[in-house]
Image (cartoon, rainbow, N blue to C red; front, side, top):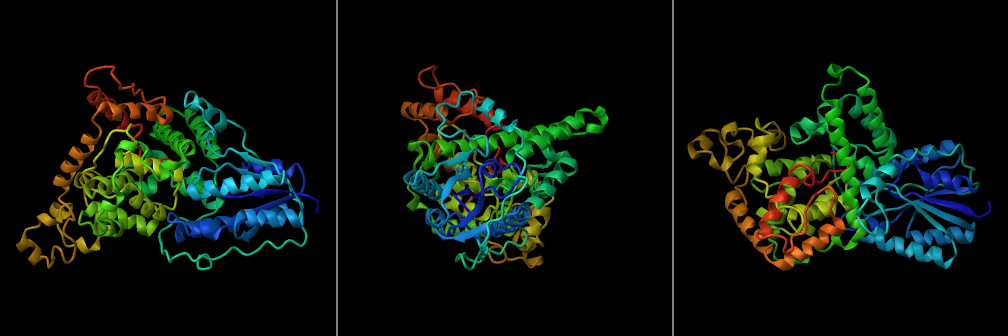
Length: 529
């Protein structure tokens, strides 16, 4: 066959708008390759639901490539060993892939691949997939560069791929073969590009009209949010095509009479804003890979061994005794998704009310989120835990969140059937149910449903005092200024605090609060609420 151009698919499971595939196809025979790495799937942030979604995407990608002439080749093992076998058997003229801002394991893996390519004189062409800038020297001008990337023409699939005779495609392994623990998720989304395109179409034409009004409540968000996050995270859709398709829809709407546009313009503006923030947060991990493991602001570090394992288990299982928190966790366990505000609340309650370390709770959520995107996830875990040093501390009131976003208790009753008998008056705080009423309803507090694991009011007060005390002092503010300069949005307007005015800490708190209510505090699902 002659030396091959290897296109290494990772989290980019598509043939459309795939520059590595298109460019490699112009240079010679292409080996489209996926390496399923058992060690990756044993990492603490990986789960069976992730693999199920990924495997469905691989099946469809294999079919799409087969129609071009050469099906996807799947191998199991360490990627550098698979590449070395290909080099020895066929020769490798070039390695092509998209850039990846993954977890710490994939970062180390990519360094090994780079060393292998350098050793053998094989050019590795890594092409940006998002608006993330590798080796970024300064955040200044970042938004303009993001916009330029999103405006680039979409890459068409190659017209054809030459078949590689005698090369077995290889089976796509099962979850059991990867030693993944059983992970039932009956309500999860299906993987594959066709599913993603159908979601994009239904959101932009029908479901998204009330996006800006309905994204905050779990009773409406499952339908009114785009639900594209898993498809962006696994690359069955490209960010660029989502942006451009959304803008085409916006242009078509602008041609209509105002009365026919309804709430669409505002909905699409809100949607695109969150697509901007998607890459903004991933850029943080790209620029500082250790924020997956270490507090962004070193003076916010706490001892993770001090966490109460019983509290952690109760939070993970959705049995804290705080009904809205438990309903959100159980919905997430069953579906692999919950809307951004509820993600933020889950982390806030874990970090502040329950005093659990963000790394432990973050790993649990990473396994549950079908749309787990490390750059967004770990930045947001730290933001909600109050460890970035540059974002305001938000301590969500889990009772008020339920009253605001599930006032009739429909969502809670759906996921907490044991509370069916509790009247709405007491549903958000079942511990307030009078004993005689509970007896009449045959409801046993603490038996049928747990008592609150903490007093939510007292726990929030203690957390507030603890967290703000940690932020006092010039040393904290000076470090925060450096973090803001490196990672902060240039839209934030946060001024350096050191010595500029008396009461600098209070001024920073007010400024950050005004900003974070709408812009920074968007929650975990920024890639696609």
